[in-house]
Image (cartoon, rainbow, N blue to C red):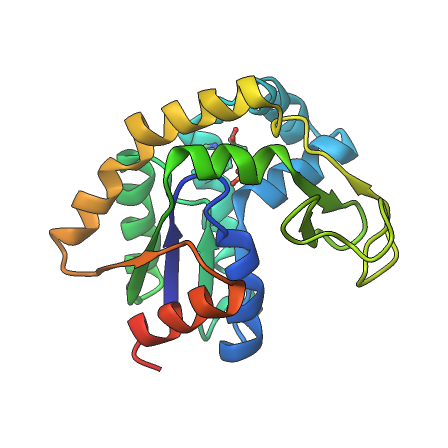
Length: 214
Ligand code: AMP
């Protein structure tokens, strides 16, 4: 089961990926999470990526393609993976095809989650993430039991630097220009299932399970 989750920032890719991990027992591979960890640790990768991320721009293709080429070779991805936030450009999609070909495998499902822009801005400005486990909350729609504290691991909640309104609008522009064309790219391969990304987390997850034929 090799999945790509496509969709604008705030569509719920990360939230849905967590449920998919439990159902299919395959790992989530999020380039955003990998880059944020590198920024936190101050590695050379993090130093290179930080400026792009803070401005709401994409990190250069060569950097993220290198990350994915290494990550997909790891043992835990042997039975499948959920790509969350990759690919984001046509050159990344082409590189992915080459990486998978070398591994003798292929993308099975591209799930594209649709949510309109104003809803995305509302979701992202209220989003809070856990420093410990990466769980995400929303100050209005999905608040933690105790303000600022993660329900799952008791870690501290924070607002991502790029979840400020101006940066969000820039990320949505970048999505429209560079990432949305991937829907047509994968439609030509007959792989895309588009799903409505509004509703409860469980409703959206059942649409994904239906789209994957499970
Ligand atoms: P995300 O958590 O997926 O919203 O990613 C946060 C930020 O990391 C993005 O705004 C980009 O700056 C960078 N990033 C994550 N994935 C990619 C990718 N596939 N290509 C380029 N930049 C990426």
